[in-house]
Length: 93
Image 1 (tube, rainbow, N blue to C red):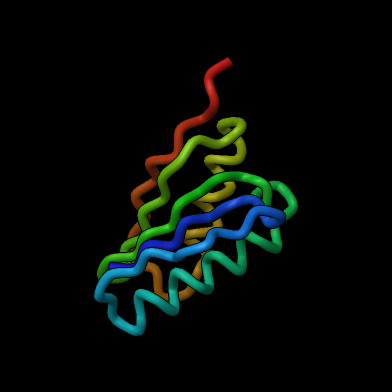
Image 2 (spheres, helix red, strand yellow):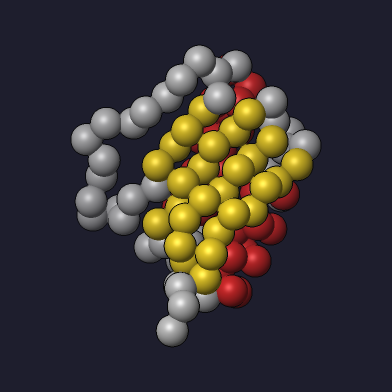
């Protein structure tokens, strides 16, 4: 399992929590993190990325449903991903 907390770019985490992970899972998590950081709509969102056996799990609260959909599409578009469990919740207003 690879767990990558995603914080605002100006607020880097002091500690990344990672458990035992395959090299493939860690590589997928890093690739997806890089893809999301390059996307102007996603880079300021608070999204946690976890990868287990090539299955991406997205968790957190995002600003709107469109951002949730875009993050899901980015995850599926990452080569090597077998499935996506999208647990992102749009911010209630």
